[in-house]
Structure formats: C-alpha cells, structure tokens
Image 1 (cartoon, protein in one colour):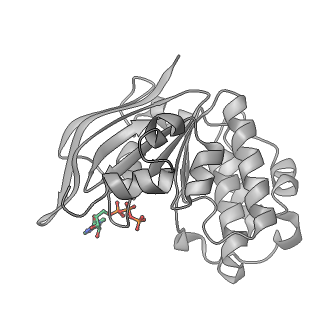
Image 2 (spheres, rainbow, N blue to C red):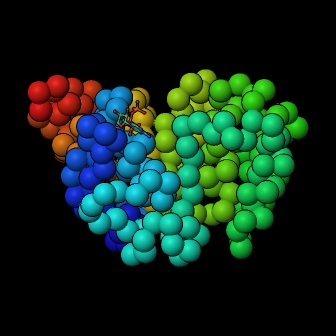
Image 3 (cartoon, rainbow, N blue to C red):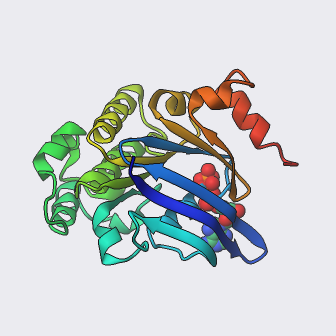
Length: 234
Ligand SMILES: Nc1ncnc2c1ncn2[C@@H]1O[C@H](COP(=O)(O)OP(=O)(O)OP(=O)(O)O)[C@@H](O)[C@H]1O
C-alpha cells in the first residue's frame, strides 16, 4: 500500500469562515477516494491546498512524502478543476499540446483526444464549448502528464450518460494502472460505483470515512450516511 496523499489537521479560514477545520485524510495509490460533502464543505479548498493553489494556515500535507508545490510533487500530480475560465480563447488541441510539452513522458495528445471524443471539437475555442465538452478537455488536461495522483473536482457534473460512462471507464483504467484518484462528487451512485474509499466532509472536517460497505452498514444507503454525517448541528 502506497500513501499518495496525506493530510493531517489542516486548517484554513477565509475571514470568519473556517473552510478547513482540522481536515485529515489519506489517499492510496491504485484506489479511488471519493470526497462527499455539502456545498461549501471545504472539498475544493482541500484540493487547492493539495495542489499548492492555496496554503493551509496549519497542519501537515504531503504528496508522496513531498510538500505540495515542490518540483517533486508537481511532476506527480494532475488536476481537473471545476472551472477553467483562463483557457477561454484556446482550442483543445493547442491547449493539450501545450500541456503535454510540460511533461517528460506525456500521453499522446491524439490518443487522449480520441478517447474522450475531443477530436470533434479540437479546433473550437474553449469558451465556445458546451459544459460537458469543457469537462472532457479538463479531464484530458489532468491526465495528459501521466500523474501518479490525480484530483478530479466533480468530473462528471453536467455530463450526459454516455460521456459519464466514458469518464467512469477512464477513471477505472487510470486507477487500475496504479494511480491514486481523488474525486469529489454529489452523485451518490457515482461514489458507490467508482470508489474504493469514501470520506464524508462537513464544515471543513472529515466526519466519516471507509469503504462504501462500512459507511452504509448502519444507514442502509450512502445517501442516508451522507445525510446522517452532515446534519447541520453536527
Ligand atoms: N477564496 C475564497 N474566499 C472566501 N471564501 C472562500 C474562498 N474559497 C472558498 N471559500 C469559502 O470556503 C468554504 C468552502 O468552500 P469550497 O469551495 O471548498 O466548498 P466545496 O465543498 O468544494 O463546495 P461545492 O460542493 O459547492 O463545490 C465556502 O464557505 C466558501 O464560500
């Protein structure tokens, strides 16, 4: 078992709002770890800390033993963010070509575009793409550098059933190749289908974690477990 990501007691506030309030979590190689939690629970903030876009005020965070943002960590990590407005005028083929050149051993761009049906709109500026097409480009960008740890922030939000299946199949393949996948989702079926490990986050902290079977033993379903562990008062 290889621990790809280790977080201990992370804290980060925005003004009076505690976005991370003692969050601890581990993610292993060759496993899909799903972060579930209500809107505003701190999931994206955590991903931003793990990818060095934000710095926690306190706590310990490491990526394969390296500090996030170090050269060692950067080369090992891929990120599919929720939104990437900065790429507005760039076409998918140029963007993925550019990203692939940042890595020593990238995936072939053509193969990645074919896999995710991006070739159909490879020459269209990113801002003109549909939400689902943008998602496909974001996913390709996260995987193009063959990361050992990849963060997928709501990878299937807004996707049609076929695109969702393509994404699920790809996530499984990546996981089976030994990559540590950490994803966020509001889709309980997705978490049940894909994840080896689930962490339920509420108010900046992991309230429960384990395999789906562990979490549903008392409550019956993942949705019930989610509701139980994210009660407003808890
Ligand atoms: N840059 C920021 N400035 C101020 N507040 C922020 C900032 N980033 C996040 N927050 C606040 O931190 C809290 C956690 O936000 P975060 O985006 O991490 O939630 P989330 O769990 O990813 O939610 P969602 O499921 O809606 O994507 C929210 O209350 C949010 O308003």
